[in-house]
Length: 206
Image (cartoon, rainbow, N blue to C red; front, top):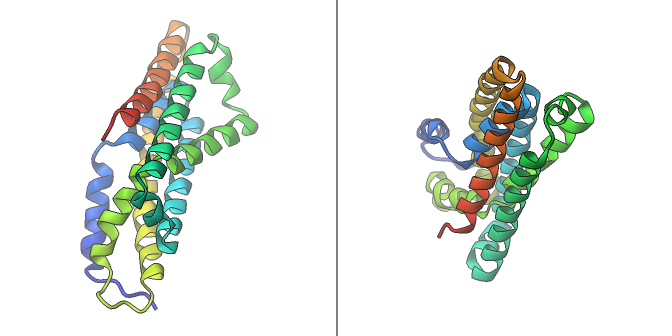
């Protein structure tokens, strides 16, 4: 049985938090601006899948175990930071003309999706955020707190997915306008710089 309190308030909170620019927002914008709408959408869906995995781990109690261990938290954080920096530098190292066109293939979009999943899963702050927010909306003495946690987590992921797809489409339109000649090079540099910057920010965050 799902025991949730103040569900409308939770939805309003989720929407408000989703509208506030965060690491996921800039990750999706960086991908879509540099590599087009398809890459942006694939990234958004990958980030959302990673969020759903965090919700499931939180419901199972595994996220709390990781958060309780300072060593485990730092290991996950540094792995996620290194991966983001790697993705950013890889994008910056791409030659003009090859990177953006390659992202049009289903195989490449599948890779972008998988990278989005891994980026989200390796961000321990997502788990920490869920553990801080969601329990406030689970009824005291709930018979199935794990199921309630999962339902609220997936609700948050659902609202964030809608907003992420809007961002991906909008940034993809910018890509179509500017991705000609030297514009493609500058967009790729912008996207790569954003990803590398996000990795550095995660690495040096408290």
